[in-house]
Image (cartoon, rainbow over all chains, first blue to last red; front, top):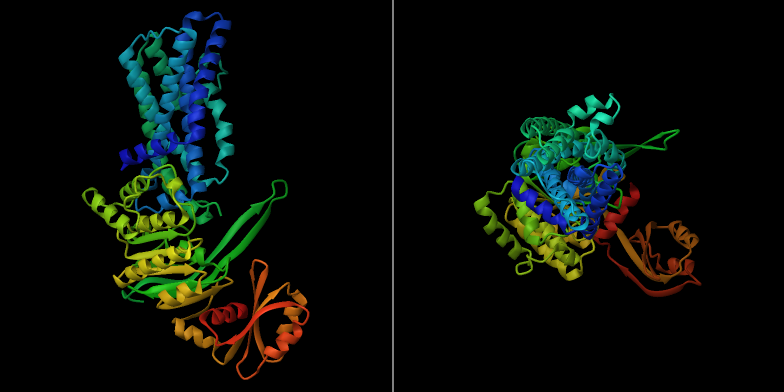
Length: 251
Length: 325
């Protein structure tokens, strides 16, 4: 059920003209941003790292807007009630949606790297190419699981869009997708340490420039599984609250 | 209450609580359903009839587990809708009217495959069941087209196929024929009647009297969140016994004239139905009082069309019950 659900949600998301347009334009903007940011900083040698960070920002945006947007879209389409009516655990119903957003987000990572190569001639020299692929897959799955935890809030809130807008930039920054977390204020450290995005970004960076990739992948996976378990409980609780508060439908 | 009942509702109430404003938030409360009780026997086709905002959909959503009642209890197939949600969901199907509720960018086949998985149809049965249902609702051959290209009638039929995927014991149909053309509506009624004949319990809400009269074994008329009358269509029709109905087609009837008609001796109910430029004025009176002459006198100066006098129908009984609420 999870596999078929994920595939069909990828199909549904990828056929949206808006999603397709965003997926085509955003990676170019991200690759450009990354390149000029690091060139002006005189760090020409770190362009590949910048491109990977920018790509990961795209995956995050996709998961965040995808999880929030997908729940909101399902509410608008009237399908949220229909899927929540299934005799399944709410987590199993929503997880395929959030993993699907992670998968469509993976396209953003690939596209940012490709545009970086084609437009700006960034050399795609990965220190650990195999580990990079594993880290990317883990990142996508991790963000899907993290998305589940977020989605529980979106099921409850009719105005989920407000939350997604507020969360986009802080997570980019705190997770160190583009800027190293060492340059951020110390109080952001504990927040960064519990976010799967931080460890995912670190794993990708280490796979790109060299470093101990596997511990980061392991921590990212462990935190994500924690999100999955927590998200599962949250979903059950939130589904009941939504039925009490009548927020599954628009009206 | 024993096992003979597929649905048992006991004093169901639902209050919607909301909040408006940020600086000085105001709490709002709307009592959508106020103590609804009824039972539906296994295999029965039960109608829930009422005007907009009467509480029909809220009642259905409490019975199908989408809403938790503020108070009262309900059981479907002997299972409590709040405490045994999953058991109830395994046994029910839910179909609502209108365009929404389907994945537009997916084909009908993909929609059905996905919901078959969600609703726990065994993988080896899915193919056969989906083909069977596509045949039943007349969508065979069009199943690979995207739903966004479907007409309203086709979407409605797909909704029904989706609701029947897991062969539910109880089917909730919430205004399934809304916006469907007359031919499609007739086919829909035939499908619903066949389902009931094959033993599926059906709870149907509708605005259309003909539909309720033709299909339902029993009907509950709901208005203002409460059941106002319950019985077979024939029993409800008796509510209008001893009455006579005058129907007048008119153009531009002023409210004052309608108010004056209500005051005529012997008049029990009046109703005005807008049909484009035309207004259909229905005046119910005691059968032994001939009000037609008086009615036409009150409407002097108004352009009139056809005027007729007839026996009351189920619709007249319904209007009388709702107006009395």
